[in-house]
Image (cartoon, rainbow, N blue to C red; front, side):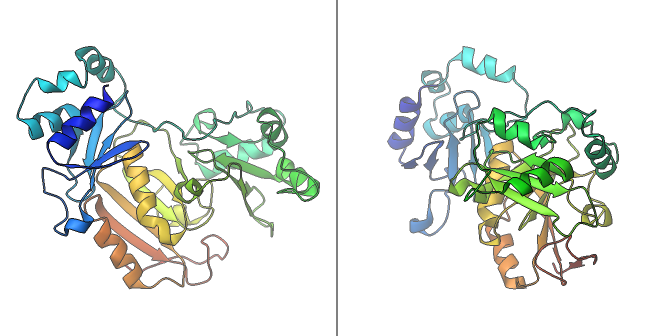
Length: 328
């Protein structure tokens, strides 16, 4: 794809706003964008040469870049100066589901040795109700020692991220899940009576950890729900997913700080082309309704339905055995 030519077409048609690392940002020609001139620029155009799409975060329109070029120029053939027919044919051979290219170093996951970790295998089977094959769960870590070794991660020892005693505890009693962007390792104790239940280990330093999420890799079009929670929540996490009966519909579990929920949802939706989704938010008890009403207003173009549950007992779900209360 000729990105310079695409950029020039956007400039010539007076909709270009900004050139970012992964996208061109432009004024949406379909809805004319935000009415405030200072806030225009909601059309994101992917610069990924293997999947050329656009999406407007204001009106929700989306599609292939070829359609956008034809619309703004009125020329049905000029798109060929940007994208060749060979590239289009190659793109259509690929799966419809788009998984974003990682921005960070790819980390290796050791092969799971079920013989050495039978207790962890039984725990995962119980938590997933045998609905997902363990081998197909992405980012699943049983052997922490091997994971740190093969990725040359030196975080163990004096003045390091975790102590030698803690690594022994992780190795014996914890299951790990690697986030989609490989910036965090989410760890969950398989002992339900343990006082030390969670551990979130930073692996790569960057603000992207605020937009980290864990995706279920299942080819099921009926799964269109995104669960957003502040803290260490995932499919292996807590009884809460059972009480809400959401496991069969959830496609993405996302964890981030509450002030970044809007950016987190947009990141997930754009990465996986989920432009209309059902959202479930697991809220802390210190957040007010107006906080989420603002969230809903900012993201109404990509949200189909939204349910917000509050944990009145504490900061994070799962620490206290109390069912959530729906607030919105």
